[in-house]
Image (cartoon, rainbow, N blue to C red; front, top):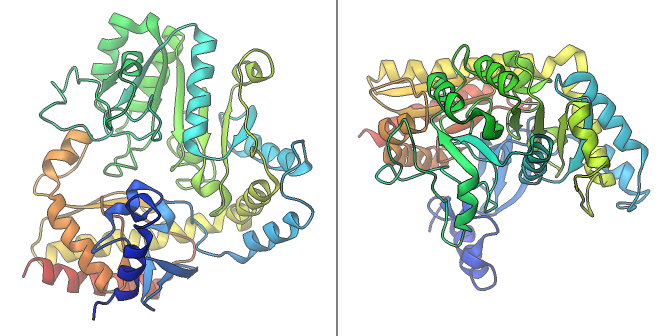
Amino acid sequence: MSQWQRSKELYELAQETLAGGVSSNVRLLGKPHPLFFERAEGAMLYDVDGNGYIDYVLSQGPMILGHSHPAVLDAVNSAMRKGQLYAGQHELEITVAQKMVEIVPSAELCRFGLSGSEMVQAAMRLARAATGRNLILRFEGHYHGWFDNVLISVAPPLDKAGPREHPNVLPGTVGQTLSSLEDFVVLPFNDLALVEDLFARQGESIACIMLEPMMCNTGAIPPEPGFLQGLRRLCDQYGTILFFDETITGFRLSLAGAQGYFGVTPDLSSFAKAMAGGFANAALVGKRELMIRFAQDVNHSGTFNSNVISMAASAAAIAELERDNGAVYRHINKLGTQLMTGLADLGRRLQIPLHVQGLPCSFHVSFTEEPPLRDYRDWATKADKARYNDFSTAMLENGVRLIGRGIWYVSAAHTEAQIAQTLEAAEKSLAKVYA
């Protein structure tokens, strides 16, 4: 009988009423089929077949404190007994907004929503309103949500992507409104010279530069020295809005996000995932003269925005991240460094082209003879994705759950013992994959 027999049965049942048996296309990628889970605690996840996994998926990033953190659950339980949704204001909104203004460099005013995708939409609308321009610069491999006007050149086929210096702007799925592609120009990440050349030609038409300040979704690729600073300089020179999509990096790279970590302050930035400890919450923050437009002539609405549950979760999660002068981040950086170093050492000892890059809180593992990865095309051409797929399946069999595209997230709940177990599982899995 399969190690995942009950999951297989539930998946077959789910396909009768759920499209594809799942509620997010990302979950279709589960191997050997989408798994069903029944509980999670700390750094552990347990499926319906009774298998336990050390979890480095962390719900695609939000569980920075680990699963079922008692402080977050207690805060939500307490707050929701007073009501869940008022269609009006409540004090927790002010609490979280004040904290974000205090700790996030770009935050002078805030607005709340439910997902990173929503806040990206708000940021683009605001940038266009503020500049009177339509064109937005984005980068290959960066993910800004699944909506028609942003699912663009996220994973473009290289035979259709065009030349590196002038990439084609490509949709991510059938059914997209192709006219929205006209509002974007795409360049490779980490190539400031190409951005400078674009601005020399079209700078007066560009409303916004939109990017993941660290390219987490594809390759965990940090910005090269001077790249973010160069974008800031160009935006200042041409009156363009600099927008950091910190859906993943916010509250993960540091309490102040990637902008605090790398020391570059954007005009606007969006946050989600880690900001609410596993509950749905998101924020757009930015300069006062931009954000105040939401109270004047730019629409931003939402029935569930700043609901009691989301705000209670964020208040509690941020308090835990702040505790003891950021002890959570010191713990994550220590264990993440041990894990990155241990995996790289395994590759050298076993004489396997195993490459580890990124930051201790969010790093990427690939099989490549040509490190490092600098942009999407490096990831698409150099990384042996079939080999990694086999590795992640073997790791699942050995009690470790990974994201199939290579990114690993580390939480405050991981322990040194679990890091050691993970490295043991990796050695066994590598032996199987390279048998």
